[in-house]
Image (cartoon, rainbow, N blue to C red; front, side, top):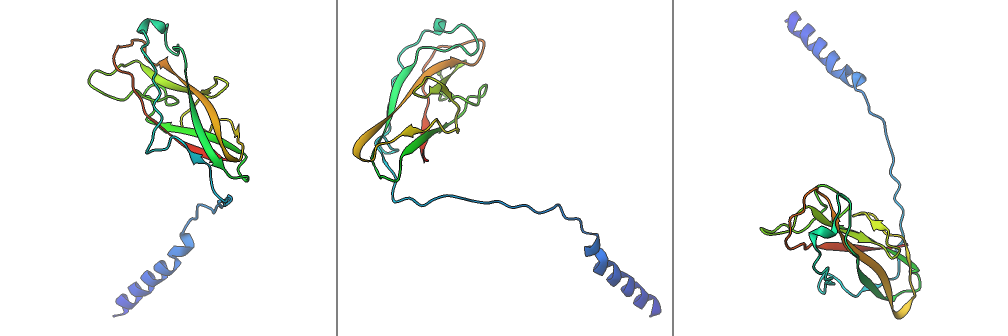
Length: 178
């Protein structure tokens, strides 16, 4: 009986002191900030009415090696009915990144799709935009007018060999108000 009581005493002492041996990894903090605005601008080409950009036919001989690009195709994103409290907006493009260059859009896979190229997006000053990174801010006019945000797209070579075929891609975008 004495051995059982001694064993219980040792076990309870070890269990009680186990928390004394626990190691903490430290503490941290996250601060969130934001603002609730009256409303946002209306996106003219939203998900139910997407913007279709025709890239045209590009010869694979237009590319001269990795990173070379074809001519650009201009397109616009339009915002309307912006409230007075919203003065600038940036656009963040998303989509499936290319396997060889995560900053550009992959060509939509298909049995006869082109390969060795991807779609690169550009801002109004023809600077490349990385996927999931906000563009520079565009100034907005409030009221009932339409704000035209200019962008461009072009094909970029991502592999040493290009295979001809349809070169379609899809991107979503998010308006980020500043």
